[in-house]
Image (cartoon, rainbow, N blue to C red):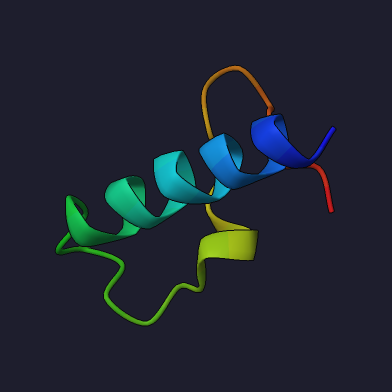
Length: 39
């Protein structure tokens, strides 16, 4: 639903910000451990 999608986006954004090795990776491309952001 919409709320979980927003949460997944926040997780992906946080992953991007916390990964200096991948500064150019977009949030939609960040592989989250639980596979939440399947777009």
